[in-house]
Length: 305
Ligand SMILES: Nc1nc2c(ncn2[C@@H]2O[C@H](COP(=O)(O)OP(=O)(O)OP(=O)(O)O)[C@@H](O)[C@H]2O)c(=O)[nH]1
Ligand SMILES: [Mg+2]
Image (cartoon, rainbow, N blue to C red; front, side, top):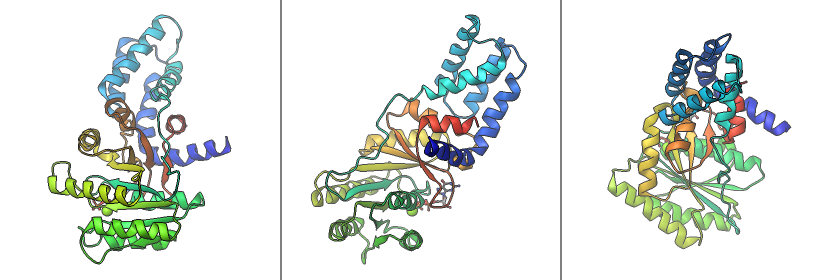
């Protein structure tokens, strides 16, 4: 319970913008009002503006109208509590935990479009796993962008984890070496950073497949996770990126970065509604500690604190 509270407080900091806009807006709309059609319409618009998705916004409003007509709720203030409960119910039990290997190392590939926050998210995961007592090794699989290896090296030093870099420019070769190093060093987790790419860049998508193949040949069962990093500030774009990447490669989960940078944090809801992939982690700042496993209850509580 104390841990849950701590998570809520941490996530709440990162959700300040969304809370101010969405929950602040709902509060001032609903306080002292009856739930007439005008109010319901405005409420629906606010949910849509927060990017929860049109269908979900409509459904919440329909449920709210029904509850009002059946006198299950009466005051506008009760509607806020109702919305909160409805939001929590959007996520049935689903597979949000990390799939760890039975025999370490667990290999996690981190992929996504340019600039979404992949390298920072790798650092955050490294820190998170390290703080759980796991030995972490990073693979600098972005051999494309000049400063990428340097950027990851700085994170590795700050966090205090090993990093495997390449001499050449082939990410598959780096990952090949990194798998060996992870085994030799008794690592629990190998995190692989990759270069940014669009799902339409066929050669780069093939490169990613090659990396995956190398990993699976070296370590049967690997990669155990392929996390797609999405930038929450890009709104519905993030949703379509997720759909396209999921079609192109086997994504196992989403790391939703930069939630702190948007007032449209409802995108978490839209991803739930429109993409058949679990959000496993959220990024809520630029520091390596600005990360939390995604927990719907904690998320909604944090939104409404
Ligand atoms: N506010 C905020 N900024 C973030 C978050 N995650 C990443 N960033 C910032 O986003 C920018 C890009 O982050 P990177 O980790 O370099 O992104 P990337 O996907 O590795 O970029 P490429 O390798 O160039 O494709 C940096 O300025 C990060 O500090 C986050 O959760 N919140
Ligand atoms: Mg990067």
